[in-house]
Length: 279
Image (tube, rainbow, N blue to C red; front, side, top):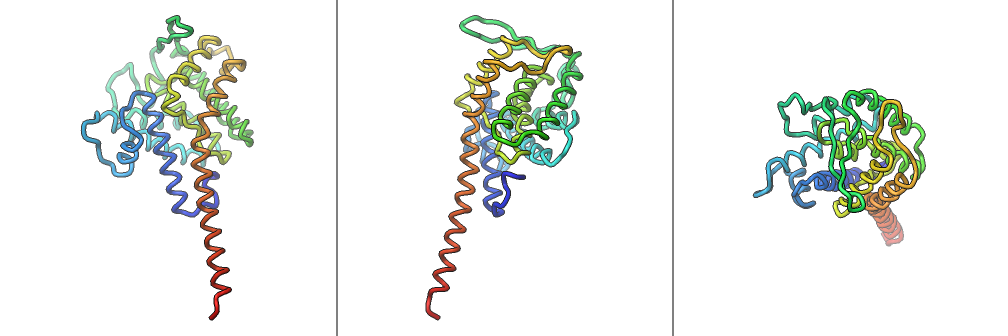
């Protein structure tokens, strides 16, 4: 993984654990998980439950953590396909539901929607139609595969993340787990290019959902004959929001590199002191 390049093994493992924990905590908390950051770290590292917390919350944490592991493996691929998304869905939806209308590891087979409030007015956002989803997601996968070939700068990576994220949550291809998977797979260009993932913070939950709802209200959702993403003021607003939420993981990476630099400096000072010491 490029963002781990040249880091010693212990710092690399520590950085990965920090990224996986914060990514899992924030993404599941946005969906209502009640575990704190510290509790999330404990559940992932120890594999134990927290007294008084719902079993579903623990399952969601472990499922998402395994999905992060899978994302880091997927980054090694040159081409991504729908089965990769199905496999992620199987992990994210940790509680298997025997319901023909709630397929796990498959595209949705019924239409889905959500309620929203924009400028004090209630409304409903209907996502892409279920029968158009397979074709739309093939276009989405094409966009993903093209993006990992052209992204190099931080702005290109940010632009790719924004496009992939908005398109995915507007199609809403699964019956559940769409937000968590969008926040995972949209980061593939980031990781491919050597950047840490963009992680939407828990304190930004309302702004995050509002920005997406405003974009969808303004532009609608993808249809078979239309564009997956429409740029403009609402696109730029969400892109700026994502940029702000990128800073904490960038800081984690910088902290890891600073620790490595301190070690190198200390080692060099020790060697110089040894050379100058009398025999």
